[in-house]
Length: 310
Length: 137
Image 1 (spheres, rainbow over the protein chains, first blue to last red):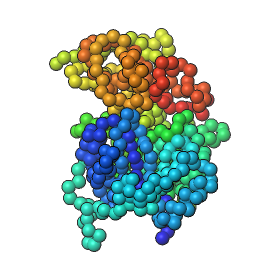
Image 2 (image 1 turned 45 degrees about the horizontal axis):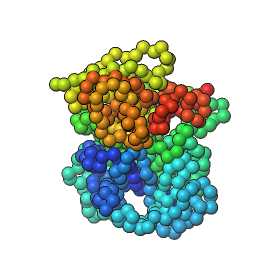
Image 3 (image 1 turned 90 degrees about the vertical axis):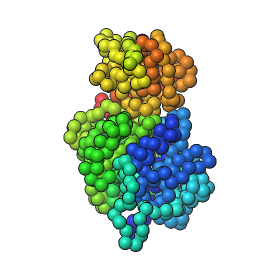
Image 4 (image 1 turned 60 degrees about the vertical axis):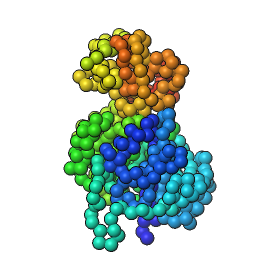
């Protein structure tokens, strides 16, 4: 197996203010599939082409934002090795194990908090419930998809203060590759880092801001630019709060649109980008070109896009 | 359709103390204040998530009757709520209102470093984050 260690972003757990409005948004508008509810009232969902039981977890709370993000690793041996290496590194706090079954259909999870204040989990087992099609002689997508119908949960962008140590943890301990970065000033301070555990332009990105544990967006993958434009239609048809787009990123080259769930958590649907092998040289953007880096068409900084987080 | 006149009487984080206040706007029937402002292109209250989560549209109602729906406690504490603070995207007028704009976007860039800026509303424990660009000094 060539892709080893951390395989992919496996789930994102979000706090919502109103569960029924949120479930409507994530199922009817975004087009995820509800797979379970638990005794605490949490709702578990997945995108249609994900085989694993869930990739989005919603919890009703009195604030919005992200509770944690989970990563699937290739085996239990890898899970235990990462747990030891994270502890030995001193780069994370609040380490601990969450018992199997705390999420339905999911094995034990090793949980830790990064230097930017984000709670992360690693796990090796989650039941594969399929993508609605047979594994032998399948179709190319199942019947009955609604809404934007992204094929998978793809990545998150997060805000926090100690970017240096969070990058160190993801790159040196968890084996991620830096694909793109934004540097500022004569000292070339890294103010944003895009990192991948696979060959995507990013599986997670961070922006350096004076805060801990803030959530900028969770992103979901569409097939093409046409589907991004159709997503814009769906946003207006459903009176969803639009942030910006459809447009194009310089960083990652993605075709994109951003909008908010009913509690103000930002969602993205996007398509495109490039394939990033681990030996691909990292791209660097300077802060005087940040406008073009973020929105390639507009070429200017967007206050709401940068400032609004949960 | 019932509509109420919304008057912005102060902007806490205005670029200048002498800045001209934006004109009044109308909020209709069942629409929240921010929707009333945005629908006809009026300005004055910063617009963020429109879902009660991010806090940039925070205002304080100084006069008038209103109701609110659930908003993030990270943005408006219960003590603040009792003093008339609310997020404009969760706020429905039941009479004409006088409001003070408390929230801010990145226009008030914090250039002094990585601490909270000095000119924020001292009442608020839950100020929205402004995007920090102190590296551009």
